[in-house]
Image (cartoon, rainbow, N blue to C red; front, top):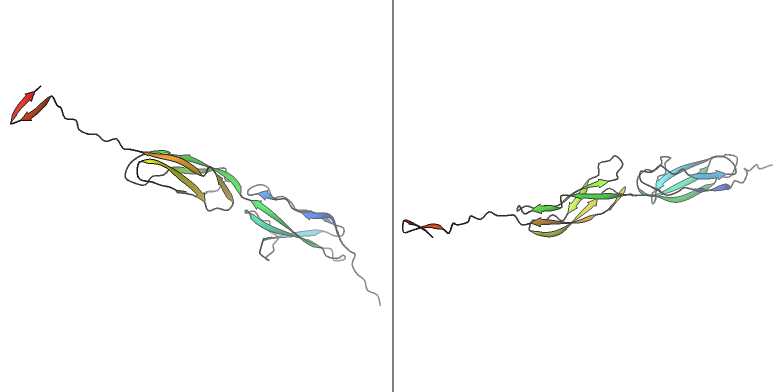
Length: 178
């Protein structure tokens, strides 16, 4: 009796995949087996749900390289890689206010996002006269913020006070002038 076994396979070029940044072009995985082609499947680190869908969101992932030649031993290698959040800058406006009895804070927008609407949360709104710090934060894991705080002021409101004319006044019904 004879037993036919497949060829012993090995990686000629070790599997690898480069880290990238959210929104940048996907870095193509690299590998070469001695026998046959390979396929790459991906999953979020900590999950066991692999798919051939290439990840695009910021996070840490596992790329599993598997050979597909039926006549050689199967190779399977897992590589961890990261898609880092894109760094974007907060642009502040309206940094000076006049007291109006209501809470006030600067407004901010994000510079550098990829055609998306990104909602910023602004904390630090104040009511009274003074100098304060406002802080911007973001709930989108695909971005990290720079320039997250700004100083702003609330100035006293000018009040018109009537001025008495001291050169003329009424006393006991008669007008006197100085």
